[in-house]
Amino acid sequence: MATAIDRAAVVLERFLAAPERPEGCLNFGELLGYLYAIVCSPEPVARSEWLRVLFNDRDPGYGGPVEGERVSAALAALHDALRADVLAGAAMLRGWFQPATPVLANLEADARLHQWANGFVAGHSFLADLWNELTPEELDDELGHALMVLSFFAGRELAEDFLADEGQGGQSLESMAESMLEEFPGALASYADIGRAVADAI
Image (cartoon, rainbow, N blue to C red; front, side):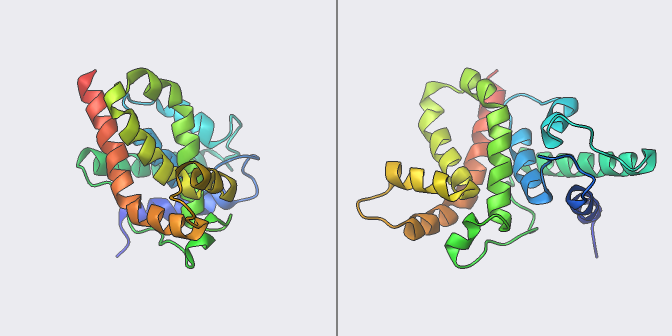
């Protein structure tokens, strides 16, 4: 049986895929990664602020007040569900998508993991100044590694840059991608844990 969150996901996936949306608007896969970064922020992010990035600083193009209310309610439900997961220490993707095979297919534009990572990068970039200001130096390495893993599938060029910087002598892009995929659940948890730790220390 579909849950309220599943129903919200259906509303948002359909809405964000419609041609009426503004250029540069995030798609649903990107929204999931973007909201993960938002709910893991060391400080709460105002809804008006994160909505601005979601719609690329443009009018969402609602078909009327009823659609606007339905989409707003779905966004609130999704945000609150992901935040509850993070606060409970249950960092997860809620099973909405599985990684593609072969592993390098996750770097392609239509791959859900690529979309998630692209949205996550948008969210963390939006909050980068806040993270830089509040994160203590002793957590820099852990945060940096989590960011690499969670960002790896955002694009082939970025993945190749990570390989050049971090790859072990002669490691292939495919081999590094497999390692990043294995580390992904731990990096999700680590990113959320650091956000909570920084928030608790403020």
